[in-house]
Image (cartoon, rainbow over all chains, first blue to last red; front, side, top):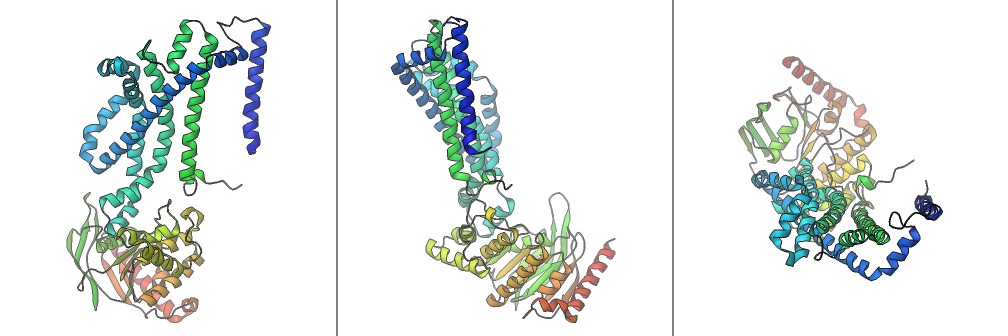
Length: 261
Length: 248
């Protein structure tokens, strides 16, 4: 399939589905609190543009902060693990416990500890817990994947630990890290949304809260508008990270190799 | 003049596998020595012990005139895939903190010597197997070694590429008065390249025969057709057969 078709076909499918949706809702006269038509959703989006954008900004900030902390913290801890087996053995099980315990179950505790007066910090921490582990585990694996003969060569030339880390282990881990970042970016958004749901009324002002609020008031069109924005945000994060991956890997990594036919 | 001497050298791994020795071997400066033996006879282990990458279990590795600058070439090209040919060749100089300008010039010169001028900015995945091996040799040469250790470097290459790399290697050896210890399992390759072939027994590797051949001063493809070459290869081959029978 050529490139233009790859873009045109999904868009055509989307337009067709929206048209069908609009037609069915009008034809069967479906009540707007059950399923609003795309045109009604668009109208709700325009009507609530200001508050939805403010909410988008809130959710985006929490997601990005959690993601940035997950990447820096995950890489830093992975580097520490690779330098000391003892530290890895001591800490890794706790990282796993943090990962496997459902975040919805931990969230109320974190909200209480951090306090509702610092709600954004609490939300960032909750989203961070969800986003952190893939970065840690993949980077740890990547740092250990350095070619053993290359490590020998570095040693032969008297390389320091720091040189081996910086010039060999980190570049080896880069494709692992970028793959984990694509997973983790999505997870940070999910974490932020879950955290807002748990935080509940009055304090959180992100998109998730707009959805809860609109649901309570049976403003289903507005709910859809907020939902659409969340999906768009998720797609934007994924696309940005895919672009970053391409920029850093396409010249040398096998994954970017064009297949000859 | 002895550059390197191994005395009663043995290597037994932590898992109890006796890989090597005991062996005694002395290599003079400027020699081109091949180590020939069956797979798993400890040839690679011997190279790693000489390079200081593995500690011997018993015996000694001595460099009577001080440890020389060592270059190492593996069976695989072992390049950093994220780095260009030039960046790969410059690695030893970077690790030794040679300033960037000088390091670039020396790495580019090393690439030119192995016939890779114009490929400085190519990434490993853009190069053929033979060219990758040339980058690997350029990297070893960039640090201007006195002793070059090579662990079956051409085993994975096709015959034509291999012969052309053999000739280029002899040229480097001649021009730089290098000392080369070359591990191979090819009798013909050892007879073509070396002035001396050390034949090893199956594990734990010991020295079965130490064969002096005509010095490889001026060799080309025609040398493979001479009686001296056939005689040398025959001698190495016979020693290898004895080594295998003794073990069986």
